[in-house]
Amino acid sequence: MSEDLKSELRAKALDVGFTACAVTHPGAIPLAPERLAEFIKAGHHGQMGWMADRMAWRGNPSALWPEARSIIMLAESYTPDHNPLDLLALREHGVISVYAQGRDYHDVVKKRLKRLGRWLIERAGGEIKVFVDTAPVMEKPLAEAAGLGWQGKHTNLLSRDLGNWFFLGAIFTTHALPTDTPAEGHCGSCRACLDICPTNAFPAPYKLDARRCISYLTIEHHGPVPEELRAKMGNRIYGCDDCLAVCPWNKFAAEASEVKYAARDGIIAPDLAELAGLDDAGFRARFSGSPIKRIGRGRFVRNVLYAIGNSGSPRLRPVAQGLCDDADAVVADAAQWAVARLA
Image 1: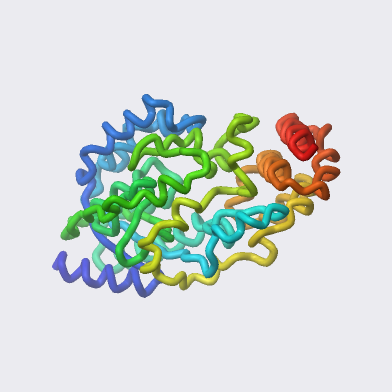
Image 2: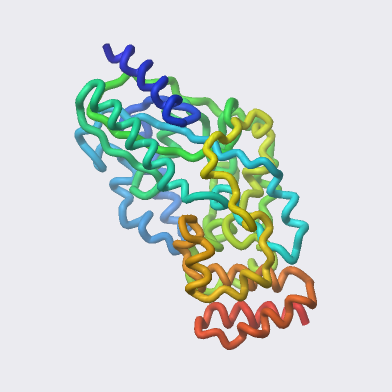
């Protein structure tokens, strides 16, 4: 019965829009607590205090929900139709991470997870809980244990069939489903993702210091970014895709099928001067329904001003000057830095 149910589940997962589906169990990541503790002890989590606060749940899925007997891991592709690295040369324009160019993936993936979960309950009973990057669940180690892929040297999940452009979601269930074989790594001697990082955020292969990662700096980091890292951020204003985009396994990347992940109008390489002029209401209107909205106008315009400072464009100096006395002290600091750099 369980094998048949699993086969039906996988077919249904593809039917509702997921790219891949695999199963593991709550005890499948025994090394996760130790590795997480090492990450936190080194301070590599930066200002993300919630990672340290909920370590017991994050490192042990059974602690999060003791009744769970299986974990269904789902992948959903969002492969871009352009090379994000090409946009880095457009210095008067900003670069937004591919995952944030369309609708908020949290909403899209969670709806799909709930749809699949309802089907499972109607088909076989039991209980479920769904998670997509908003709870203390270590999705990447669990996905590796389920066989969806392996964590590459850039710490992101990689797949021989999907590349590395895909979201992860999890369904915890009280059903005891047959598990899949864990994935093996296939990075070999390749260092492309490590060598391309503009801020040297990888102290070693398979290890990330978030405090130097541009994705962390532009999204999670509050306050001014350390000055020695600002110039290295280039025109990246929300996230960074360099280590993902350079991976050779992307030649096998699955095409994105969800139209909600398609880039909105004006979000691929938007004009920096226009973005710098957004007030709070304009920012919220511009990024309604986007994951960008959650960082707020202040942090976003801070990032835009760092990009302006890195642009080398005299045209943008007056734009930065106009924000040197902004009510947000962090924005004002970024504006003053940009003006000085362009001078």
